[in-house]
Length: 177
Image 1 (cartoon, one colour):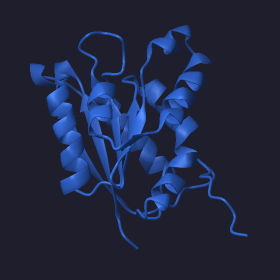
Image 2 (image 1 turned 45 degrees about the vertical axis):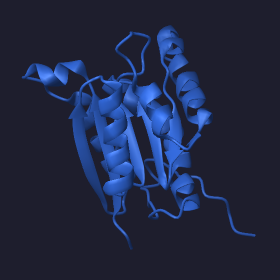
Image 3 (image 1 turned 90 degrees about the vertical axis):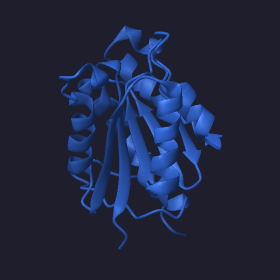
Image 4 (image 1 turned 60 degrees about the vertical axis):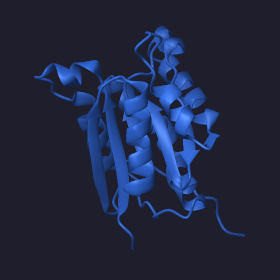
């Protein structure tokens, strides 16, 4: 069985300011460790909120490091510096708008400002890229909502088979007829 490579990208201007503890990237790794029972390897980067840097990082992780899934955190709000969705759209062949729609719908159950979030997802070659918000609590809420579809999406792209702890998260895979 092929070990899955999963890119984790934290987008934050504070990252280049020196002392910075990346709680969001760690939250993604923690949640994925809870979900996944199959072997996986994180490919982890903390980068500034700059569209060209974000795009280059996504391209490198997808094309050179062969990540089947890339999960970003941060840069999805309405501020002028929040450009993660634009960077994602610039490097994707096809967009997957249902991911962003579901994440916003889920977040609206907890906070009315979820409508300000611009999470999205898209496909670059054989890689699924999903943009998450920057707060660890929101990361879990959004991943709980969309992750059941992620293993099957990766199956459809001939990626590694992601096995999950079904007592934690139950992936959806259609039954063969």
